[in-house]
Image 1: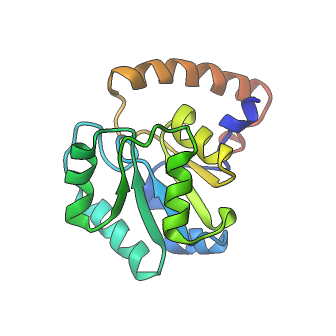
Image 2: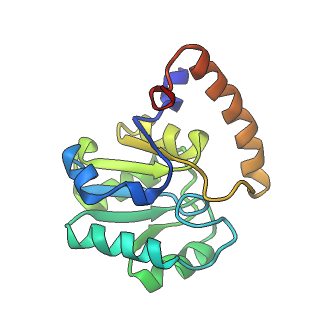
Length: 171
């Protein structure tokens, strides 16, 4: 059961996820979380680096969807200026939004990577949907109310994985 919380990959920042990194793994589409994955949870707009990251992925033909449990207002204000497809109020880790994003991309399970900063929403949802998962270090160490609870649970799961030697990126 706990293996559903184990990501396929781990990176410090989304900026490490380059088109060549994705292409080497056969990835043609990215479903990415917004808050604390792309920008701080209280930052309304993309940074120049994140804008460039989106442009680079698009130029290389990699489909991107922003998927967030946050409100439509929050996600739309971030996504629309970038002309990026988005799904708000996604209810991650439930699978419906992941399925919707996959259908809109027209890609197979093995061609999509889910990128996010939380085990309990992004990684669990992606793994349950049969997609590749990439865990990123949160952009900032502060979180919204509900995320703080998730982080406490995540620490216990990480400790279990550490004891079992399952965190290959810590080697």
